[in-house]
Length: 534
Ligand code: HAM
Image (cartoon, rainbow, N blue to C red; front, side):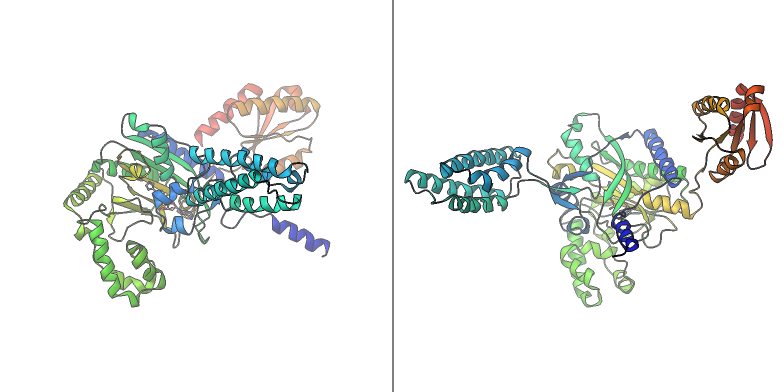
């Protein structure tokens, strides 16, 4: 391999993983502005920030989001954690050949060690330090039987004949241990509603004044096919209201907050779609799903393979299909609105009225069913222009019952998550994503005395809130000014021998080339005035 090829290979090795990306300045300034707006707007609606772990037990998501959903079944990054440290270490030591070969009364000592290990495993199983599942139950049973035969052998003096034979014997037990799952299955969070509900239960938040209003920002992980607006690590800004009543005013207020945020951040052309998917009862959604299923069976041949599969796994998701050829068929399917129970119908009408009271414009979309299992009643989504096919910038809905499903008390819940990557894209496409680039002041200095003044000037200007570039080594003024231009600085502060001896500093406005002289204290006042006028 030539040097050049080797270098190329080396470079290729270290790239951001497919579907992840680096967010760089100046774009990160826009991200910060968006997040800052969220902090401000959500605070005015009484929300407090929650910071959650990036990974959780896989089972949390399986239970909350649903094992059959794409998010959990196909897209989750999950892995088995290591065992608790002492078990992790012991499983290596007990069965290690070096230890077994140590000679002497090898077998009896091996069995002692093995028993210690097995007792530790059993207590870990009981206390939940290792997962309580079939594999571990079966593993412990097998190891118990193994222990009994080992003890019998010792009792009857039937020791394995050689160190190798002891090792083979130990290998059999090690195979049982390897069949167990000593670490918990964990997953990078694909969404955060499940975590918020877990935290609500874990911290006993039901005893706080209800409802509890929380919001979060941060990365989520889904192994989807990357494309514009779809990443494997993406960012959400989400909010949840837990506890208290399920009054439709809550549904409307959470949406009002969302629209206020979008407005403040400058998103244009956002469209809010709403629907009600009822609740999980025979006279409501369950009945509708059965009706839908039989309607789908009748047109099965005209559907694509994905939708055909979903007839059995999750018929509601067929309504989500974007496949062109399926659209006319889907248009003929029964609507959920005609199958809602009276209570869900009333709740939905009231939620719409509450939106109208707040002046929030919406469109109803009977096909809006959402891809996560926990939803009931109100669901909503917001689309924005400039995003191509991935045009949903926000999704949310009501999920009464989720906290209970995760082991907490019966609790009402509603919330949403904004796709921050998509929001940023849409802002950029509409020209609302401009960031202020460059420094306020570049200090062009020459000479040792000037440098001392430059250091002081940099400190004072920074303290006054200006962004300042102070070159670390002396440069000719011409070079310094061209560097200032390249960095997009607004002003160059010129400090040379003359300026220092006259105590008059030269400020050059780079866009006009105009130069003015100021005594040191007046400089900051001048810049402040200029800033407040711009
Ligand atoms: P979701 O609809 O799965 O809902 O995601 C919410 C938003 O996250 C989407 O509308 C989209 O903007 C963004 N998003 C999802 N996947 C990706 C991706 N691969 N790349 C870029 N952006 C993406 C939830 O996550 C629920 N937890 C929302 C919620 C909160 N419901 C109630 N409370």
